[in-house]
Amino acid sequence: MDPAQATLPVVLALAGIVVALVLSIVQKTSYQQLSQNLYDQLEKLSTISSDDLDPARYQQQLAKSSLSTRAQNILLEIYRCIDQDREKIFDFQQKSASSEVKVHLAETLAAQINRVIESLTEPVLMVNQYGEITLMNPAAVNLLGLEDVATGTPLEKGLQCDSLVQLLNETRRRKLKSTRLAEIELEDPDSEKHWYRVTVNTVTEGNSEGTSDASFGAVAVMRDISGYKAIQRRNAEFVSAVSHEMKTPLAGIKAYTELLADGEAEDEETRDEFLGVISGQADRLQRLIDNLLNLARIEAGVVSVSKKPRSLNDLLDEAAAIVQPTAEQKNITLKVELSPMYLGVLADRDMILQAAINLLSNAIKYTPDGGSVTLRSRMSDREVHFEVEDTGVGLSPEDCEMVFEKFYRVKKDQKMASGTGLGLPLAKHIVEDVHSGTLTVKSELGQGSTFMIALPTVQVIEHAS
Ligand code: ADP
Image 1 (cartoon, helix red, strand yellow):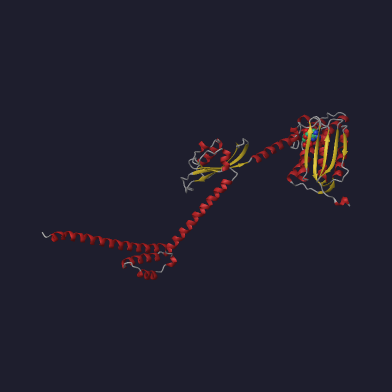
Image 2: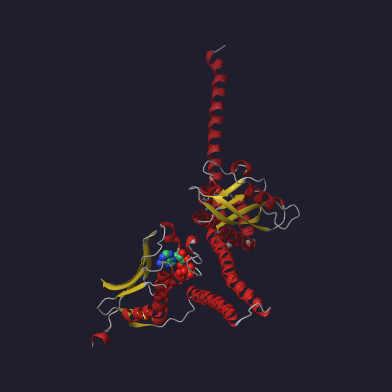
């Protein structure tokens, strides 16, 4: 065979392969181009705003493109569909925009609520429907010792306070929207005991609210009510102390009235004696009620105060004159050593007089016969001072701290004189709350006491003239 004839089929076969390859490359390139064009057009359509829709203009644009007529027709059809559904699309676009805003707002709100809960001084603790801790603010972590407890920990494992565990779990298991209240006593990290009012509310989980299979978690908010508890306790003590103080004179009055009624006072002298006791007890009752009323009025701020520039020395002279007879009865020397200077104070006359009398009569009451009581006044810097010093029984350091408390009376001295335990608290209120001064005491047991008052001074022009 001619060699040229022998190679011909091979050459033809090779040429065929090359043509097929070229064709496939050309075809592939034009498909790619076409699909890219289509893709671009479709992308444009997906972002078109409803305001820009104009099928006629779009048709013109397509005509200028390199797309086949078929492709143009398909795109135009899609465009028309979009145009027909423009309302729906517009609505959808708006909804999606507004839900994006809502999501953003919800996220911001959640972050804000979180910050508020974190910054609350009230401990807050929340559990989910399975009784796992889902939220605890720093105050709760601190109070309940939850530093090493992670969210998701079962309540019983994480929390050492049984009553709180029980309260949260019982509320959660009720499966009803409800609120429970309880008061519990807890120790803080410094081992100080505090009373807390715990409010536990159910929290609906997910979207189950109102449905029969609603599931609930619970959140506890704890408020420190130690101050309120202390007031409650003091009020109870106060009522019991007042009742006790009133009972004694009332019992005396009743007993002596009965003796009189039964004709037990056979002679004039005995009758006078009985009447004297009744009158004395009635006076005691009167004193107690007056002191109580004065104290209550000052504490409530309803007392009418009439402060005017006055001479402190004049007021002290008056107080000394009032107690002088009592001092004489006990053979106590009352020394009055007032400053020769004019001591001007802005004072309510009756109140300062009352405070000075209370201090002077105490000094006389708690000084044994034959002792002495000294009333002094002086000016210092911007204050005027007066003090009542006695050579009486004195007070221990503990009693010095307690004597300004209502109804406090030193037990060992109760027999020395009758009293209500209200004279010093009243004087303190008058001096400190009404006149912005100070009332303090220094004392030594068996040696005597000094009650000291400092009041802000006033410049009195009238006096200078
Ligand atoms: P009371 O009516 O009992 O005198 P106060 O409030 O005036 O009530 O005084 C409270 C208590 O303080 C008194 O019961 C007394 O024990 C003590 N006390 C007050 N003044 C003196 C004093 N000058 N010396 C010693 N103890 C005093």
